[in-house]
Image 1: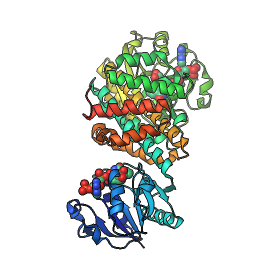
Image 2: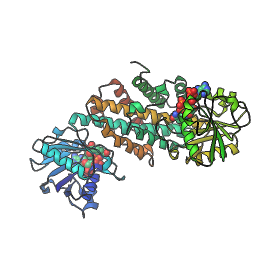
Image 3: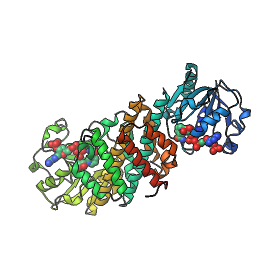
Length: 255
Length: 255
Ligand SMILES: NC(=O)c1ccc[n+]([C@@H]2O[C@H](COP(=O)([O-])OP(=O)(O)OC[C@H]3O[C@@H](n4cnc5c(N)ncnc54)[C@H](OP(=O)(O)O)[C@@H]3O)[C@@H](O)[C@H]2O)c1
Ligand SMILES: NC(=O)c1ccc[n+]([C@@H]2O[C@H](COP(=O)([O-])OP(=O)(O)OC[C@H]3O[C@@H](n4cnc5c(N)ncnc54)[C@H](OP(=O)(O)O)[C@@H]3O)[C@@H](O)[C@H]2O)c1
């Protein structure tokens, strides 16, 4: 049995609590937030606190708080030499106060409060300074059905940037496609199967191999026709930059 | 029973043939290509020809050939007043020779020869000049399990551009994420569940509502940290342009 205290009441904290609470191997013994308002609904399931001095002894303390709060909160914890981890892709392991045993438990997925999360689809990137701590974190992740990977701080930080490309930036391309279609009264909905297929294709093929289309073929006529259709300068800029990018990748253009 | 002749032997022609051949309501009576080499393997299943003068009478002739070949091939067809359609997102309906009844049967999906296609995930954008032709095309699409939509040439052309955004450009963002992660020895594979989740999210939520991340939050510290991590000028350019784009969309920046 792994005993855990969760600190923070946001998206990550909430989804971790729900996942931990479902499995026998994990016991969430306390849930802390600076204000317990957000935790009201969970009072029957777990001890909810807003006072750090009430923290009990546990195998693991998870700081699932905003990036900037990790460092100060870790310093304020009224104990030492216990395992304290954060859940951030962007914050180093040494940002946790050195009086603790330190680690990172970074779930590489996008969470929102409303949508359910299946942790089988959430790779957990684990970092720890001691091997025994690493193994405890790995056991924890496996208990909720997540794949795990040992990832150091530098690697985690580039994964975090890369996640912005495949999540936020990709979503913004979907948004532009929405704008482009609606401008002609065409239905964005028609693109949804293609959106899914594009994501599925790279599950077992490299993005390099999966590429198709006019930019890769260097089909100048189609490229010109497309640019003529785009009315928003901003869409044109994206079209040009990404077309060039594809051409560089596929040897159609040299820097 | 709808009798069909397919012209062309590429990705689209091949997948349409396989789908048509599976259902009782459709009979592919001939398959034409300018060279029958590519069609050798199908000779037992269908009459394969490379001579236009051998074309038989059918309810429908599908020109699944390269965009530039649609116009000349339609002119060369040795008959008139029969229904002839092309499968292109980028070519107008009037590019088909006016001696024919004309239409478009555009499958909005990405096809490659190797991967199997489930036509339930292929919306067919239909255009026709006569209502009776429209209904025949719709019946054809429904027979292979595809959703259908009436789409005029202007709408189809913007769907085609928008498809480049959600397919080719998105795939290029995956490619950059691959480059970024590999440069630090981190695993691109860890991003795959996030890639899928991002595509799934917009299946029932608008991309506008689905957006998250540092650009939308205007989290300047994280944006700066990310830019410091990116070593390739080209990645930096994309990062800046798409960040600005998200900020414009979500009112963090004004033009
Ligand atoms: N959301 C994701 O998709 C995701 C994915 C992977 C990793 N992460 C990481 O997980 C961590 C939490 O993210 P989240 O999305 O769950 O954040 P969130 O929903 O914004 O919640 C942030 C939590 O931190 C608390 N907090 C903020 N400032 C604090 C302070 N100075 N002292 C104490 N508590 C403070 C907030 O308390 P109040 O309730 O009182 O405001 C809130 O409970 C971050 O490090 C983030 O980078 C997030
Ligand atoms: N691939 C997709 O994902 C996709 C999706 C939706 C719509 N489309 C549209 O579907 C159509 C076909 O695309 P595709 O991907 O199947 O193309 P493809 O795989 O490149 O095949 C093109 C076919 O056109 C034939 N062709 C080329 N030039 C010709 C000419 N001058 N005269 C006669 N035949 C000629 C080729 O004959 P040979 O075999 O002799 O070279 C080949 O059979 C295009 O209009 C395309 O825009 C494609």
